[in-house]
Image (tube, rainbow, N blue to C red):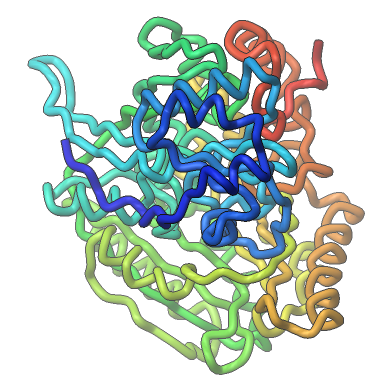
Length: 477
């Protein structure tokens, strides 16, 4: 078992502050005197509260940061018994800020950072166990040292558990499958203090594979698949925005038979030379696809007439994520829109070029292809046909002029609306990316699946102790 370095827990938790702000939590502190409780008068409250998206300004009644399972059980059962609404925060990268609950109790799980690899038995393959506070960067670094790998997201600060249990698109999902498909099992804490293992409830395992973000309780740890670490060819290719139409048209032709070894995050971004079309290119090498990889790379480099940037090099999955970290690891204010579409159709390209992004606003495209869209009846994650998830983001530095910030947010809303009004949006989508007003559980998962989830929620969390959990399961009774 290895304990990775948890984010530092600021000192200065004050009984006086808790007595002044939230005296109703004093009995909990009396029971667990070492528990870290931060209220709005605590000097480090904002440091602990802030998330990836600084537009998330909800002020919780308190943030509780347990150090171990005993403190966590005490906290959750106390809050549930006293009907304090809770939210669950691990990585803090949900663009909609659903980990922070206004006037409720935030359960901060960033101290749960244990990872270990289990060799398996004579008939079993190795797997790993990761606590809920483990991030992509922590996990890949740990596995890299053992010449192992597992699919993860693109950003090193994202919680692995939140990423996988919500579905999980990333740089290796075409080759290995969605993050949800990697989950072998989990331990989960219910609001009444019961610790459940999915080995004892296969239906719960099905639900956690794509719909496991709080509805049934708090995931304590995941068990997931691990693979021999491959070499990858990874880096950035960039083309001028002026060539976007031909770049996307040519890329769509490649997407008609997109190799599973390729996962390319496509986005508009300003890398220092103005807004351009950027591919975060990632190819997983195996013994059989090196020639295919070279041929595909040649096609990618010919998407446009002007290749502004080419940083491709042989690497490892961890080194690639580490290289990408400076591009992702910053906190700013943003408004995120999201929509799923079938492909880079001419109509979609028209929308994007009619409303081109500039500066730090942009569009991220997650690909669903290869093993990511192989049907898996053992997983709730629903969208198993070729698709793109568009994260349409108006982003600005927190100190940006309010009018400029508003313009960025309005741009994102406009592009989202245009895509939907032109009939390009798929009914299914990706809940982890999508603002609540565009989330429909029945539309995303189907009525039968929502009924199954609702029955599980009634069994494990009938009081809806985590009201900001998703998917929202009130549509079907």
